[in-house]
Image (cartoon, rainbow, N blue to C red; front, side):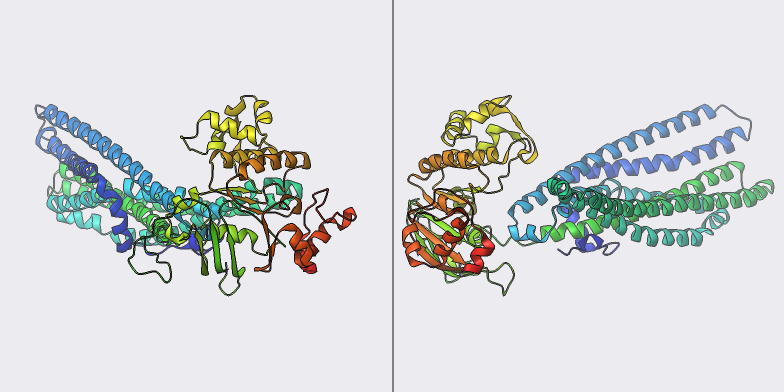
Length: 623
């Protein structure tokens, strides 16, 4: 999806897109048919009204006979009631269908968004994706509620009026039709300008959403670096462009509808001028002239309505093109049996059943590149035995977090393979694969809800007692109990009311409550003060007991007691061993160790007394 995809306008009508849109209408054909019947009935009773007026004037009023006027009046009243009922049924039915179609489409889009790989979100701003789910679906809803079915009523009404006008008097009909070329010119001018105006409005709506999402999410950074004035200026520019695009659109509408009314009035004036003379000459009746004027006034209404529906159609085509572009984005990280085949496996063979969940991991000659040709990991291989604790260190950009992303299949390896208990992770269903892991990140993400809800994350099988036990084990229970409602305290968006350390403790409680087979820690203690870190270390020893653990750390103090430490440098696995073995090698790890403690004086060879973080720049230069 291009960054300019919101400027896509496409054709005014695309049969391929329309066929896909009609698919959403199929489950509601019954309701759509009811709306169609109501539209036909409404058109019929409205076309009957001028005929009734003609009969009342010619058959009774002109002759001075009022005996039948009461009957005609009652019939006319009946057509008004019928028109009301038909309009009510049509409107409510189409609106209900439209709401159900919007519900179905948004479900499908959100389901697809959840299955797309993280690389897709790396390329597409969240604000633009929000526009897909909201504004674009709304535009398609307008097509179903006011376009696909109801346009049939406009066509039927126009055809009926033309037939009746010709039947009543062909000369007056020609007078009515003589203004059609002018109508066509005005309509073509309107459609061409509104089309461009609509493109601009849609583009600026998307950019406004993207700007707001980015800057509201990063408001802390905006305020910290005093960018309020710059951000406000940029917002003002985008908001002003959006306003001006809407004002241009309003201008075209303000010209179009009065112009149609003016042309209609001109037609009526011609009918009165010539028709009045023909009435005086006795060639037509006064009732015919009155009926003709009423039909002429109704003649231009469906023309202007269809012009407006053309705009709805244009909007829906543009929105559907973008929406289907999203839905057609292939899901590259898939379950076995859904189109993906692990290189080297037999085509059509069933995915092997995973062995007993021991937690053994093998990374076999793995390479990976976010951008083709620029490898982030290069031929990395290592083995993690079940229950073994592994630490991973390295300078920023060495591929530590990328390795975790591959292990959890947020991305797929470019070459090589990763196995868990002997099974290639690409041959394990994603839900099952990720159920083996608990991931604790440096930047903890909390959802709106409660403290307890953020620990169990929707797992109904995790009871309150287990939630509390997990919180107690990682020393989160004391601060939770001090909150106004304890474990039922509401959590603000992204945990805004909690400190960084408190959010980190909750992430540990969440991991423990899930009782994972494999524990992954990605800089999990880097945002915690030293006192809290000591408490967490105690909890980690309990949490890591009997589990395979992979810990990425900048603080060497957090991984010194690991069974093995891997040292990554520029995407390559350069060193491997225990803390003491790596120090004895006097290689990259030894250099990291020296850099970490040089500002604190000599450190004992067995391990530091303090825990500053690695300077990644210096570490990279030293290595």
